[in-house]
Every structure is written in structure tokens, then in C-alpha cells.
Length: 210
Image (tube, rainbow, N blue to C red; front, side):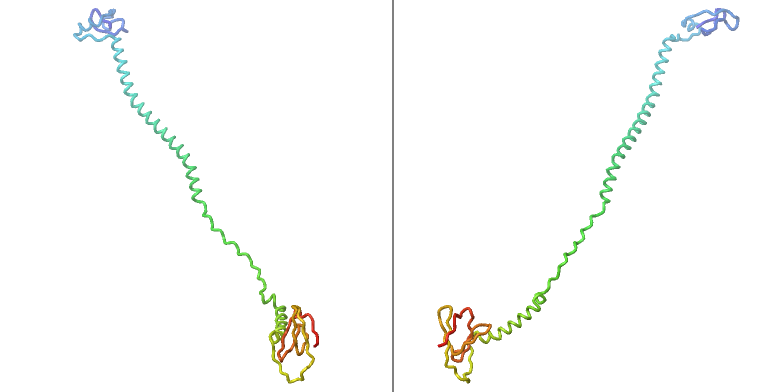
């Protein structure tokens, strides 16, 4: 600081002369100024600068804390938003795939296969129609003889007796004496004592007269 030696008015270091009498100012110590003004000595400028810098740093740190908190909050929101978006993109394909799986139509029950066509085979009556008729007629014709000729049949002896006896030689070695013998398509017929009997052709070896 500077002081006017005449009026002892205090001036800053930038002034060179007193404003009242234009006297040149002189440098004085802070202790002299404190003694003149009865005020305690002020700290040095370096101390003031250090104190001011500390206060500035404290204020700066105090201001930086809310700013840092705000930045941290914003950064956390951004990170959460990015994570949520990525997670949503990752889960959306799986959800869509599950929806596709659930939306698949229910498999229809297999339609019953057409029953194989059955060719109607002719009935035994149709197959054996004419043949059976002819067979039945033949069987009737043959049975008309066989039913009456398989066993001995009694006949009346009203006609004149034939004294010429016949002997039927059998293939088994035996022989049969008969009053009368005749041949038919069914076999060999013979009559003996009024009974008519039929022999198969394969059983008869020969017929001789006696």
C-alpha cells in the first residue's frame, strides 16, 4: 500500500500522487497502516491468495459434488436404458419364436384310409349253378338206381323162373351164385332168391353160366 506523507491518506499501489496536494506517495508497511488507522494488521497478500485459493477449491469441490452426482445419475440412466434395450432385443426373438410355436395349427387327425374294395366273389350257388344242377340231376339219376340197388331189393317172382343160373366170379377170389345177372353203367346187378343186389364193376372178375 502507499500513503501520502502530508495528509497520510492511504492509496493503493497503483497510484503515484495524492489527489489533494499532488504529493508523491510513499510505500508503507501494513503494520504502519494498522497503527495509523488503529486496525489490526491484515495478512499478507500471499496468505490472502492462499486462503482465497483454498476457499475457491472448497467451493469448486462443493459445486463439483452435485455435478458429479448428476453426471453419475445420468450415466446410470443411460446404462440402464442401453441394457434394457439390448435385453428387450434379445428376448423379443425368443418370445416371437415361442408365439410361432404356440400358434402352429393343431395337427389334424389322419383321415381314415378308404377301406379296400372287396371284389365280390360269386357265391357258391353262382359258381356251381349249372354244374350243380347237372350234378344234382345226375346224382338224382344215379341215386335213383343206387338207393334202390345198394341193398338187396325184394322182387316178386310172378314171372317164370329162369333155370339158367349165373355165377359171378369176384376179384377177391370169391363167387356169387345168382338167378339173373345184368349190366348197367352203375355196375353189375344180380337177383338171387327175389333180392336184387348191385356190385361195383371193379369187384367183378367174370360172369359164367352154370
